[in-house]
Every structure is written in C-alpha cells, then in structure tokens.
Amino acid sequence: VSPLKTGLSKAKVRKQIDEAYQKEWWEPIPYRSDKEIKAKISPPITAFETEWVLTEVIKPDLQPGQKRRPKGSIKTVEIVVRCVYYRHELNAERERENRQFKMEQMDKSLQEIRCKLNKRKYRDLEFCKNKLSKLLNSYSEVKEFVKCDISQTSEGVISLVWAWDYESIQQESKYDGIFALLTNYTKKQVNKNVLIKKYRNRDEVEVDFKEMKGLLDLERVLFQRPERIDTYV
Image (cartoon, rainbow, N blue to C red; front, side):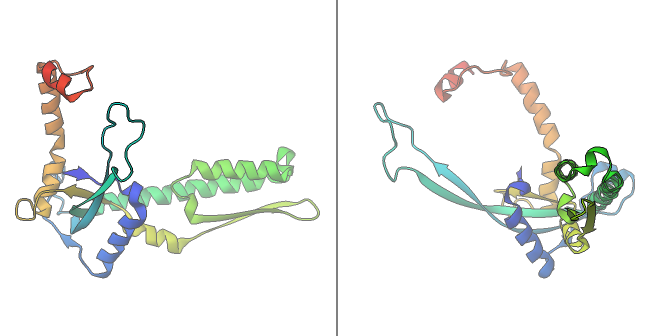
C-alpha cells in the first residue's frame, strides 16, 4: 500500500475525480479512526476505485568498457495497479475554512497596499508591481483564484483593483479532503475499507522496522552494493 503523490499528477488525478463525480462512483465506507469512534462521529469517508498506470524506466548496467548503453536497451515498463480515492468530509471542511481564511487575509493585504499607493516609494509603478508580486507569492495557496490589475494613468496616478474567481473556488472545493492509495492487493484480498485501515496502521510498521534496525545494528549501512549489504547483515 502506498500513497499517490497527487500533486505530481494533478491533471490526471483531477480528471479521474471529476469522472467519479459525474458517474456517481463515490460511496460511503464504514471506516472510522479511533478518535472518531471515541468522539462518536459518523463515518466521514466516501471512496471510489479505479486504476493507475505506474511507469518505470529500466536501464541496464554498463558493462566493463562501455561508455553508453546500446541503442534500444533502455525500456519503459508500465504496470497497472489498483487506485482507491478517499474523501474525508471533515478534512474537506477544514481545507475550505483554511482557504477562506487565506483569502480574507490576502484581501486585507491587498487593501493595505492600495492605501499606500501614490505615497513615498509607492509613487513608482515598478516598485508597486514588485510589492504586489511578493504579496501574491506569499499567498501561494489562493493566488490562482484572484485576478489583480495595477496600472498608472497618464497623470501618474497608480491604482490597484482585484476580483476573486468564485467559480474556480467552487470547482476547487471538489478536491478538498481527497487522497489516494495505490496497492497491488486484489479486491478479494483487501476491500476499500480494509485498505485504508492498513495504511493508517503504517506507523506501527515503521516503529517495528526502527526497533528491528536497532537490534540488528542497521541504523546506518555504509555499503551500497547488494552483495556487500547481504554479507554485512
């Protein structure tokens, strides 16, 4: 079981999520964390299943005397695995609230810049543009949802206006609280509910690994070749 880094495949991920909404693939699952059970919170997760293609480039080792690999020796292998998307409603709500908070903070910062226009250093258009650019970059989570226009009249008066794209914000909320897991377990072996339970228990696995590495003195292995590592172990 492995998490899918959705940010690296944003377009493909969102295409699959959009399709799930259109075809109504989302369905509730009974999984709840220990905290949610203790707080008597109803199961907050819905899920749907699809496939994901993993791509691996296979490069053979260079033979003695070789400077380049022979033409055609590098191959690309595609592996199709199960991909299960989960949407946690409580996390989605927190992400929406955080986005709204960031938007309000950014709105205040834009108003502060507008109040400073045409005073002291803010009489220079390029200076104002640089300040605006830095401000937008400091709100990287929400800057894509606002359109700013800073201009100067022939009389030298600088003005700043902005507008929020609420349609895009509404669209973005569809992806809140969503994460995906990849697995080579079959559906018969592990269903959507058990899969997330296995993933949530990963901390116990990592603790066990740490203890085992300590007992075997494997906290730091200085060898790189597999045969030398095997000999060391």
